[in-house]
Amino acid sequence: MTQIESAIAAYESGPTKLRAACDGLTHAQLHTRIAPGTWSIAENAVHLVDSDLASTHRKRRIVAEDNPLLVAYDENAFIANLPSDRTDLAEVLDLFEANRRFTARWLRTLPPDAFARTGVHTQRGKVTLLQVVEIYANHVDHHLKFVAEKRRNLGL
Image (cartoon, rainbow, N blue to C red; front, side, top):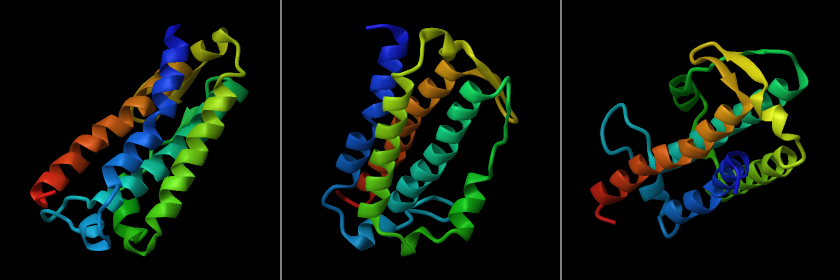
């Protein structure tokens, strides 16, 4: 398996991991913040959807445009001002899975040289398409560490 194929497979596996991390939890458990300034499990899931939708747009711009500017966003403002406690977790998980499936399928249609194309992220600097795919493949695992800690703190 090539580095590109491996990155896409890892990226595509994220929804299964997120579903497993949220499985069997009550509404209260999903929405409990362990400490001030932390996110709930549901907020982590919503954040993954928010960031994934942004990353899909970034990936597509990298392929379609020459070295596009990829603007960062304030993830904490999204959590604070877009109330995730009013979202349906099943819908969040379905959207996350659908977006990842759509994006992975599209990525597999690209020639290998497309993964060397670049964009300039306002926080990370110059990034290749492959780097962006890898970043978002790892993004789920990064947040699942927090979810696992929250589950332990809830006694689950």
